[in-house]
Image (cartoon, rainbow, N blue to C red; front, side):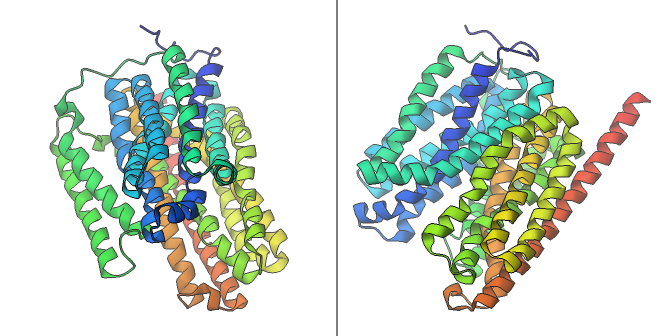
Length: 475
């Protein structure tokens, strides 16, 4: 029997943090490393791009649908135990991806890989609160953000080199091999965390799981546009998602052991933090979705230079994550949250202005202002919400954080792309003038800045709520 975490121990957590950081890195690589393999998969399986894209979408859909269930299982069975199971699922699924003889089997294996990836994203944030002392929580959260950024940045470059050297199957073996090492190290050295009670099928809330999975899958498909183009069919998927969410709320109110305690979402600090997380994640997709079009069609850069300019974002995120966490520990989560949101707002406004004045240099400067602001927000918001989470619901809160971030990314990819396309005025951006593309780019980022301002208001309200709660406690 492995020993349990001591309460808020100040030292001895380096190895545990290393294991958690490697897990986050692998989950992030799982998203980004496969993107560069799509052309090879088209040639290997002689399949159209619309089918091959499901290699990416299956992973993202699995993560979105499973992350809440995986988090709930962590609370019921113990975070360390579920974390170890997630590593095993991710590793085996990665090996199956490498061995897949058909595209259908590869997509199925990628869905399994996403199940493991959801656990690898959710459980580290829940385990960190036990693994490190309270005064080091911010630094630990910053490290998780850094590893996520490194995985996003390294995936396309490392995957491209591996595919050029040995073929696309080795890109998945590159995930399976460190996954196996991580599994062995975790099984040997990660202390056990006790479950919150004796789990049963009733405590798992199977009806809630099924309905929530349906709602999230419908929304994910409508947001990514993977199933249908914009129009009545997509609207139908959004309606299905809304109906599923309404049914989920009804089910949770009647369940003695609900999947998501609705009272948790009535905790104002947690609810406001999740809402701000969704808004900020939405606006951060602007650079990834709209940026390449502006660089290529307004500034006239070729693909190689566009890639180099876009790489500045993940590189800056990787460098700023740990410092953001340390600042959170030093100055407090509430203060850093406000600073991060203000910097994010300023970065979005600079995107609306500087690239038009200074070209590539203005774009890079804006990116270097925006990205650290996001890392400050991420470290402070994650730290604040996890410190506010009840002990028996840490896994669930961690999962809701991941879910709000994923939904924000998908919403941003759809909404920001739609705003940009409408502002350009033509479905084919390549046919639009550089002036039209530049104006659409400016309008899109002004809209994104408006959403960031809304997140700033939520943070301000959250601060007032927290201060009022402290005043009542002192009274």
